[in-house]
Length: 429
Image (tube, rainbow, N blue to C red; front, side, top):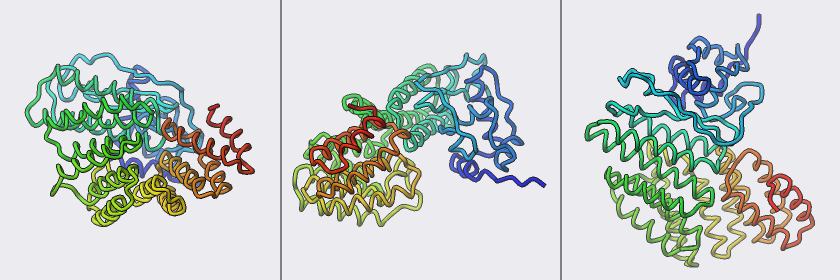
């Protein structure tokens, strides 16, 4: 009797995305039509074979759409053989369906994107007819999928992908009809995607583009009267201000977010906003105010909600430690920064957030350099280089390049060797 190894990875991901076997089969078939020009033939029974381990490597006609649905290669979906993807960024759109009824396939058509060699499918809206709350949820799910992809891979192209998607949703909103509740929901959902586009541009080093999308997101958040979305955008803008060295602006923006959400925010959001205030104070060299804000963030974090907001899933105890490390570097306390950076790294290594893990190694390396622990800094840099082929983030790459330069300036024994590997792996001069 043949024994198969169940695919627990796929099972867990289906649960995370809310897919039944039938639902995943339908999603794969719809995405197959976008990729190959004709519907797929996936069935709930086939999904069962994937889950049981009876099929260890799906055929291309079902594997490629499956990869696109989850935004990750088949090797990361629990299958045995390595995945193969095509480089570059493309947006594939199918022909218009002749019907715009709620049951029409046009409601299930998708953008199929190729990002960093991995396909990603996003749901689209009809270009005529009436929009409902289900369509609003489709837009929200697109923002979630983009961020899940970003957590795994990073991606300089994600801002452009989000921009294409915003254009599509805005076009559908102009052409279709809908009620007041749907209109408010669309404003809020568009604000979420615009906010994500801003974050992706920020991570790509495109600061003006990031600000453009955050301004757009704020406009939609105001139209929807969505205070939490406004706070999310202000949090991002405060973070950007700190990174650019504008500490006073960072503090002012974060305080507006705190004021506007007073009585409406949970401990997790409060903690995030207080870390933004703390970072702004650190950039200004105000150690006492920074320490008080960090203490408040730690206290608020203890009030974690039972059901945290989806966009805050990245914010854990490690994020508080990482902010503490950055603040301590700004305040000229490198030894304490090393301790905080180590705490942050320990937390992120227990998560699947590879981009954050890359950032944690770079942050630790720079803290170690500042503390004079140069050999340990090289070791941390080496671990960061191990992750570079798997993650795309120009912003973090710039930090890694600065770590290389700092090490060369200090002339540790292994700095030259590390620099050579950096050139080979990061393809930077």
